[in-house]
Amino acid sequence: MTTLCAKEIKAVRKPHCCEQCNRMIAVGEPAHYAFGIWEGEPFGNYVHIECRAAANEYAEMNDLWFEEYPWFQFMDDSEHNHHAWLLEKHPVVAARLNVKAAAA
Image (cartoon, rainbow, N blue to C red; front, side, top):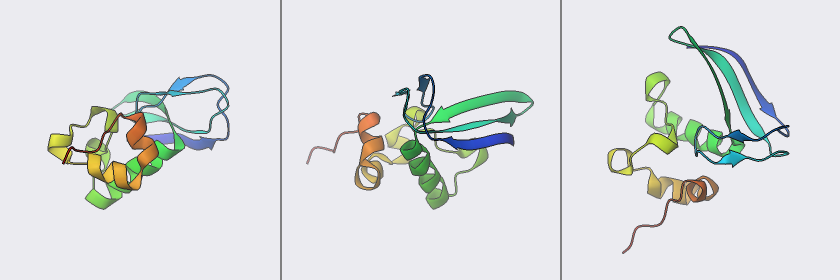
């Protein structure tokens, strides 16, 4: 993967869908933008600042990089067991993903 551009945007000028939580990033909200080339194909994505922080922390904690990088909207909790972690460490992201506490 070659990232050609990565930057934090103080306020997006038009709405974008967050690649981590699949929720809209509203006009005026901050976001992180990345553009690059993956396996010969160009890519570009926008993510909420909080979603990016959570994904990077989870990736660092579990050594999940490149193909294994965590994209929360596509992750199954039965395989990764990340819901409890999100609820504890990143409740804003958990709420965006509709993660609920397990019934006791």
